[in-house]
Length: 155
Image 1 (spheres, rainbow, N blue to C red):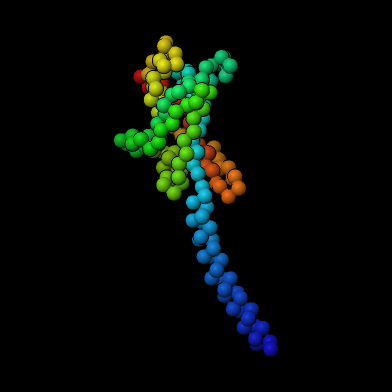
Image 2 (spheres, helix red, strand yellow):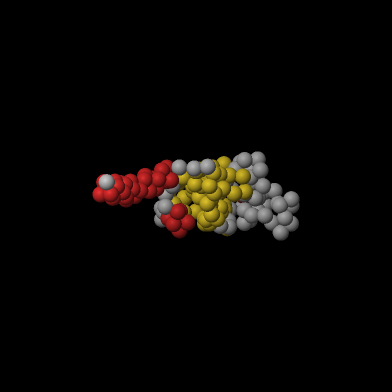
């Protein structure tokens, strides 16, 4: 009887040893499938695209501006977004298609709408590197949050 119990325990241990790595591998894939990369921010009508020295109430937002996510040395357009009436934009990407490290090092946001569209005294375009600010878990969804690292004026 004792030998049957030992045999049963050994079979259970062997089964767990086989099943757990398979489950972890599948959950890793599911985690990627249930992930999302979100690039978002607020664009202001200023030479830096950020809040001016007078604060948010003194700096108007840049509504209806077209932004592009450009990647690589050739500046391939990966995604496009338009700011809403509050100057807010959001770009969503599939984490299975993009590596976070590549996005941060090889990509930038480019505002394609000239600054003169929101203020006739400003000229040029705005560009910004990307900055990772952390992850958000929403149920089973893992959201990678990225913001503009700081817009600069390009004449």
